[in-house]
Image (tube, rainbow, N blue to C red; front, side):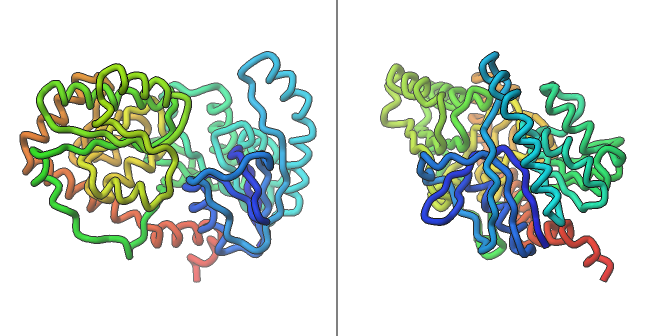
Length: 380
């Protein structure tokens, strides 16, 4: 099978291999296990080296069609996009013509182009992974709404199955509730007794890009609030982005040099170890699809304190497996303090979180992916 991926993730090239954002590549490598040839249409930047968080594709037949990275955030960018758009669209059409299965990564600029182009290949099997918030009542950019409209329509996207996070009422028959996995069944070990150490030192963690939309500075403000309340607390950041400077300034301006640590982008094993040692994930993002860091923290009994966006309330069983908050620093600090003072309740929620997350393993994920590529195998 010739399997085509159309997406917006920027790729890098080194020593004969294509690299991209690690969690994304780790997932795609599972899809690639069941195909003969991989075709990728995405932006490629050969001038920068892979980051520690980046991973290479694992397949011996990868054909790459590079396209320019583009956006519509300014007049200059719009003009550049209009200039490149015909060539990008033709590249996508050419790649789709040679593929047996078309896979779109949405939402994104390339996802929108792919959603438009796939209409001309009505007899080809297709999947679309919608990694954003599928909740149609939420505030979304117009381009995201348009992608939702196209790929969810059996007429506009024939033979398309759309993978979305969470279960939503009154959806079309081609919508498939889905999930993302990080850890294997082989990695499941008994949880450490974190609740015993709650009154000694509380370990907070933030994992993800340091971007304004994820509000990483709130985690630092929660740390300061808890320290002012007299608790021994430390906070570890894993991730990189433009908000790093504001976090560093807050740290230095409030004397948190011995309590707040920025580790940047690191390998997955280091993040895994940090989750195993942490008590709370403080993740106050404005918008998510299936926040992998929330599911990953739950896998290790690290209790998530997070916002009720997208399918997150379903993930946390509406507060029974974590804490759903509006994002106010005082509210978050009070929720954390309440669980510090109630270690039995913390343990109960931690165990429920781990039990839920550990049902979504890589083995189950891989089985679901194979059924999407070869749906006829289910009948046999």
